[in-house]
Amino acid sequence: MIHATLKQLSQQLADKQVSAVELATEYLQRIDALNPQLNAFITVDRDKTLLEAAAADARRAAGSAGLLTGAPIAHKDIFCQQGWKTSCGSKMLDNFISPYDAHVIEQCQAAGLVTLGRANMDEFAMGSSNENSYYGAVKNPWDLNAIPGGSSGGSAAAVAARLAPVATATDTGGSIRQPASHCGVTGIKPTYGVVSRFGMVAYASSLDQGGVMAQTAEDCALMLNVIAGFDERDSTSLERAKEDYSRDLAQPLAGLRVGLPREYFADGLAADVGRIIDNAVSELKKLGAEVVDISLPNTQLSIPAYYVIAPAEASANLSRFDGVRYGHRASEYKDLVDMYEKSRAEGFGSEVKRRIMVGTYVLSHGYYDAYYIKAQKIRRLIADDFKAAFAGCDVILGPVAPTAAFNLGEKSGDPVQMYLSDIYTLSVNLAGLPAMSVPAGFSDNGRPVGLQIIGNYFSEAKMLNVAHQFQQVTDWHSKAPAL
Image (cartoon, rainbow, N blue to C red; front, side, top):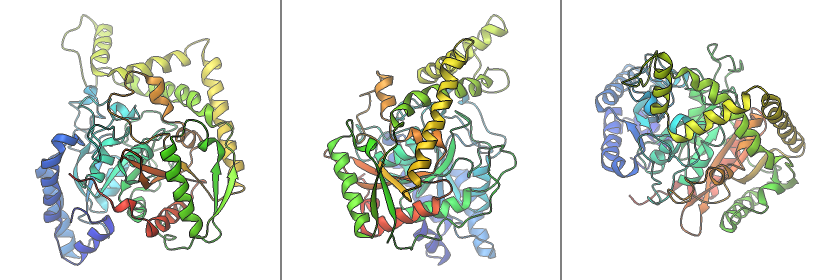
């Protein structure tokens, strides 16, 4: 059962080959056995999970079940979930039990999905390696010496290790696509505003977007059908008609125009990763796709622009964590200001502090125009690059990261080198575009590598079509680590 896709599990549940309680129990046993070495989950509550599973079985017995009722899911620990600890991987929220559900959680519960637990993550989603969690680093199931990618490393590791068939995740600068690539699973970040951010603890509000990870593009389409949709509680939620994101999965790729940005295949791309992407493009050409040479000239500027805009928004968003209303409070302090200072110093980790300080600096008097406004102008140039590129192609393909997963601790002492690993993903968030990662092969040292598919606004169904057709002629997505 644990190697079945979400689609296959839903069919087994519908055919009464397995119950939701039996399915949840199977996954919980696997989590008990493997999580101590992988550290993919922060919180697991067996009693809560089995209660949800029993309720799902009751819905199926009553004939009121949906397609995914009873299917297990892991939730990134950034989505507020009533009655569950929502820590964001931080000491600051180690004692916070959410009193309400995020919109994504509401949608999953309405569909009857069963929560297996809360997935580990970089603290407040700040990181590319999942080494910044207060609860310790997540390990890559393919190689325990390797990072799983961040910030949604727990979600990716859980799906890769078959601790869950699907997991929610978030992407601010690549935090779905990078861990999906490094762990050999499929992950999708939809267009900004397609998935509500209500109840998703904010890092950088103009960049954050919820999404999902699963084994296959088909599973991602089924999950996007669940979590996407308008929510009036989120001012950036887009009021659009509901879509069936699985509608085009079976469409042939004949005539598809695939754009290859020359900037994505320049110096800095590891030879083995480049070879894997070339092979993936060749497979798509066999399916009828036509390759178009394109340029995204401002790609290199995405790193400095992002690392001005995102920390600036983070410094504002994280100012709410002051030790007064909820979260960590220092045990000893002299006065109110001392309490603020000590609570925040104790509650936040080093990477979060670094980004708060950078963000506060670029927003300060005399530097706002010099840094923040310029970064926003560059953001517009990057969006214009994509607009020009999509005039000549339907989707854009390339690597997710310059290399396969690096070793734990390899870059943790050099933040700049860590940030450079985001070069192919940041521009997508700055432009608000949808993108996904699809398993495409293994590096020379046996670590997974993903193919990035970038679409125009609201072209999730087309991206999923490309990914699904690729997965019909390859088997990278079906491979699992030997654990």
